[in-house]
Image (cartoon, rainbow, N blue to C red; front, side):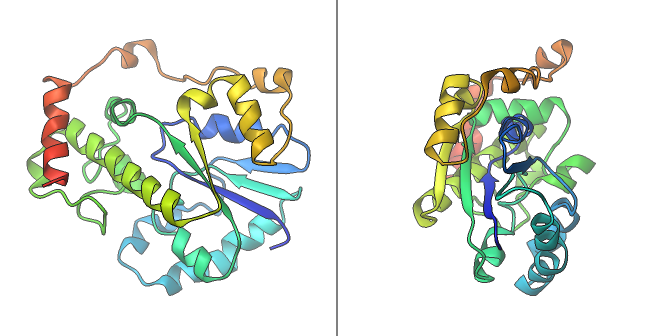
Length: 239
């Protein structure tokens, strides 16, 4: 590739769309959230498929589409990338960097639960998220007996485990927290430190609000004490 490639390791519900929009304001940078050819097309299939299917997709569809984009730097903030695409792309010899985009597990879980994006249970959960039946880092016995919120919380912890793995084993990685993402000064520093570019405050402000939650949805909480519900998951994955 003739471009600098940057992808994210993130659970989603963490400002990925906002990050892409902010970085896309930079000259000579193309930044997208979940563009076509979409990792979603293959994510569910490749949880049990060999590398060759993924590499064929990357070679024939994804990389040519990226190469056709303008600019010297390409950023894609899809949370699907960390669900089966990192190792195949690295094995192909393609150089790329990772942004480890973090948000507290409870916040991620609540956001997913409110949208009924439940791992292994709802259509969007199946389409976009890992679930305990996949080849995952955090095994979760008897997961079908758990509540929807607990599955969302498990998913958030699973991505945290992947983030830690890539942070330790992938030298070309950068950390960015949700709190720093929504703070312009911190985001400005991140873009400069990584060498992506110098953001313009007015252009970023023009993107609009980050939080797209409907007020009534944001006030909803699952039944039960969250600390207790989460403790069950933490105990199960650490057993």
